[in-house]
Structure formats: structure tokens, C-alpha cells
View 1 (cartoon, helix red, strand yellow):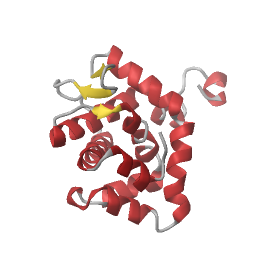
View 2 (cartoon, rainbow, N blue to C red; view 1 turned 45 degrees about the vertical axis):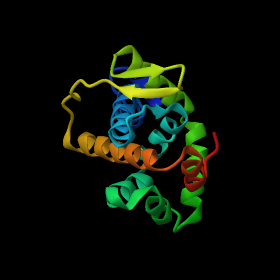
View 3 (tube, rainbow, N blue to C red; view 1 turned 135 degrees about the vertical axis):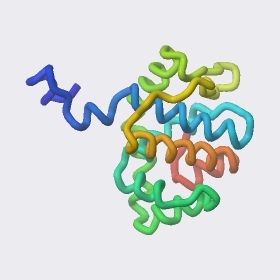
View 4 (cartoon, helix red, strand yellow; view 1 turned 120 degrees about the vertical axis):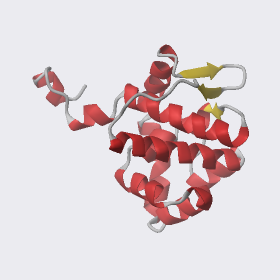
Length: 167
């Protein structure tokens, strides 16, 4: 909860609306769906922690939307890395959003949108239909599904190297 929300508990700020576990669990659901559709396995939890830092950051999101599915993660990273700091910032945002990512994963499991397989440290999306969301949220979900597909196409070590993150 932000200071603004504490001052006016009846109103949520723009940040509270975007940085919330319900939206995060939906975005994880889409990423896990994309990953599973590509390779038939659950999304590794370590990779899930990179979804929100990409999807909820304006510049990264714009590059994600502007990169076609067949282009893959490497072209996404190359476009984002035109300004090297933008690519390197994914790691810092991943660390900064750890608690939101964990809360989103927890909310997804508790609401039965996601299954956490503790033996393989992977996330599976339930086959239920997604909730009805605004067109912008649906577009964001499709972007996260695209990330899941890209993650599935290359080894986790290559994802880490491409996005300049460490697990």
C-alpha cells in the first residue's frame, strides 16, 4: 500500500492498480500457458520472476509488444539493449519486484489459476478460461504468453545470459 492509499483508504493509486498480485497471477498464468504450449512442461519458477519486471515496465512492455513471436527472445533483448542500461535494468527490477512476484505466485496458487510443482520447481497454468479483462490487460497477457513461448525455446541458462539476469 502506498502512502497515498494510507491517506485515502477508499482510493487506490495507479501504482496499486498495476503492482498487485491479482494482475501478477494473471500474467504468470499467461506466461505459463505460453511456455507449456511450446514445450509441454511447466514454466521454471526462476523464469517466472522475470515476467513482471518486463511486463510492468513501460519501455520493456513496448518492445515486447513490438517484437513478433517468431523473432524470439534474442531479438527482443537486442531491441531493448539498444540502450544497454535498459537491458541491464531487468535484473535490478527482478530483484526489486521479488516480493510482488512471490505474492502473485501465491495468489495464483491460492485461487487455483496456477499449480506450483515443488518437485520440478515449475508453474503450470490451469486450463480454465481467463477472466474477462479490458483490452489493454488482454494485450498485456498476450505479451506475457509470448514471453513464455520464447523462454521455452531456449535453455534457461541462455535466457539468463540474454536478459543479463542471474538466478
